[in-house]
Each structure stands twice: as structure tokens, then as C-alpha cells.
Image 1 (cartoon, one colour):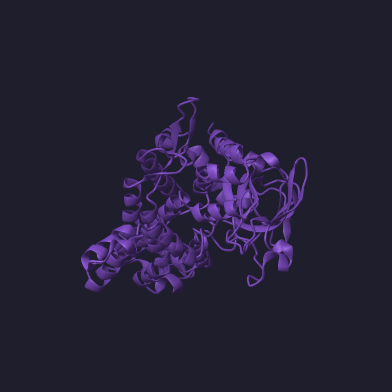
Image 2: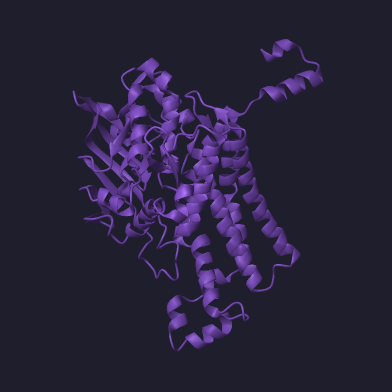
Length: 483
């Protein structure tokens, strides 16, 4: 089935315990901090029903004949990935912002678990069928699915059990109904999602084969004992005309507190076995990195478009120094696109029979996108000039005492009126300079994993055999060094 926006909003009015700005939230769908981003999620659901977008955002399931969301479709061909990329572009252009936690990338994390079913069954056969069931549930119900990962961590020089045990999420009891868990996780969008795939962060298990900290499960966001303590949102702090992205596309982050939450056995995906947890951490972004990096591609489009509009309105686009900076932004953008294109063109069969993007191209593309993002942001600031940080607010452009002066100084020519110039500068300020912009930059740096883990993924997925053999042949080395 395909949900509507109304069905989605109704589904999150489910008695969940959400806190923000020191107050309990009665209805997340109408609360001013959450409403703008929830409206975007609802808009995405509604887009799938509209003739203009349906072909790009949906597919017809072969077995049921029903239309389903293309983002949640199990990837089995290169075309599946091309359609997914086009769907992300269609959505971003329609909502007019880059939104990362929309469910498709986090559903992909479950596909990695599906690939590891045999390994999971080797260590504990109780849970192998659960992952297939939950993947099917996401497909059939079109629920908003996110992925809780990072713990508060505490003192990382100590083992989890040598400090407050709740610093890392862990199981504290087993019952006939399931496991009981305590601890906390951070997850963007959890307060307005339906469920989360909760999994361990990278932990120091030492030589342990079994650990109550090594667990992964699906949890509904209204589970008894689950509390959502959210950071303060950017929406509502300022006039949307001055900060259009802050007030429209802020994805609110949540500290999920598990206060003795019961996880039914059918929702447990792996438990206790550190081998299973380590496997999942190593393959977690096998699929989801593509959607994540795709969104950074569209962030670069916003930077290029904003910068080029700014230099064109002041007649600077023909200066060589300006063109060089724009060309650097373009190289960054096209570098991301080239990695994604190559990852799909050279896609590989996964252990579970799915088609995964070429892992070496995908992970090197992620490093390129994330490691250079802060530099490209600063370059875009240079191209936009100092006026994005000194321009008066919208109220001054409408005040009868100040409006004539601002119209005089902000109108450039017959093409660029003061109103269009103000709108562009406000957009650039919010994209590059605001609290929202700074948050977005930091989020992209750590959203999937920290930079060292990005590079470790590159190392683990690169085929060294070619360079090694090339040097062995060229240097005349013996065959035994390759063993």
C-alpha cells in the first residue's frame, strides 16, 4: 500500500512520550518545532499518489500488483538504483530543500542485515526470519522507518560494564515475551517516525563472544517506557522569510531513552553474539550510503545555484577568479556524481542475492562528499559575498521608514529587484551561515559514521590485488609474496 500524508500524520498521534524545550509535546504533528518537517514527510507521501510524480516515486509489486514506494524496493537491478536516484532528486526539487532522514536510506540498513542472514543463523538461528519479515512489513505498510545508532557512550577508555551500564544500550532481562532493554540512542527524526532499527555502535567487546550490549531490534516509537528528549528546533525562532530553510526543513534530533522497554522476540534481529554485531557494523552502509551521498550531491547543487545567482546579479560571473571558484564547486559536485554513477554501473551481487552498489566506488564517493563539504561551503560563502551576513531582515524591507532606502540599495537592474535580491541573500544566509547551516554541516560529517570509519570502509572494500600484482610483475618479485 501507499500511505497518504494524512495517514502518516494520524499514525504518529499514538501516545508517544516526546519532550522538547523543557515541555512535553501533546501532538507532534501540530507542534511548531516538528510541524514543518512533518509536513514535508506528509508531502512526500502525497506526491506518490499524484500523476505528476507517481511514475518516479512508485513501482508495481509483481506478486501483489500493488503500488509501493520505490525507496523501499529491494534492489535487484541497475535500473532499481537509477530509479531510486531519480526519486530522491524529484523529492528534493519538489520540497525545495535537502532532507536526509526520510526513511529510504535507513530501510537500506536492514537490507545489509538481510545479506547476513546466513551468518546470523550460524550464531543464533532464532532470529533469521525476523529480518525478512520486517523488510516485507516496510514494503507493505509504507511506514516511516529510521535507524538509531549512536549511544551517549560515556568514558570510552573503559569497557561498558566498568562504568554506568546504561551509557551503552543493553539487555537487562529476558522474558517469554522478549528482551528488556535499557540505555539511550540518538536518532534524527525518531520523534516523528513510526519505528527504528536499533543497533549497537562500535563497542570494545574485547575477547567476549557474548555480550548484552550486542543487540539489534526493531522498536515502535510509541513503545511503553520509550522517551524522546529532543534538541530545540530551529523552526519558529525567526521569520521564515529571513530563514526559509530553518523554518521548513529542520530535521529534529532525538535522544531516545529506553527505560526498561520490552522488545518482543519477533522484533529481535540479533542478540548477544558479538560476531553478529561486528558483522552488521562492517556492512551497515552497504546500500544506505548511496541515498546519503545522493543527498549531498543535491546540497552541492544548492550551493552552486545560490553562488551563481549571486555573482550573476552583480555582474561578476565573467571574472576569471570567480569562474575558478565556481569550477571548483562543479568539480566537487561532478566528483560525487561520478562516484555514484560508477557505483551503479559497476554494481555487484550481494551475499543475499540483491544488487549492491560497487562498494569501492560508493565508499570513496562518501569520503569525497563528506571530507570536502566544509571547504565547498566556505567557497560558496566567498562567492556569495559579505552581504549574506549583513543584510537587514524582511521587516525592514516592509517598514515604510526604511523600505525606500532598502529598495534603492538592493535593486540592481531591471532583472534584479530588491525583493528578489533579499530573497536570494536570505536563502544563502540560511544555507551557508545560519545555526541550521552549521548543524547541517556537522550532521553530514557524522550522520553515517565518523571520518575515520569512512576511510576504514574504503580500506576494507578496495581490491588491492591489482596494484600488488602490477608491482610484483614490474619489480620481478617472487610469487610467494602474494600468498
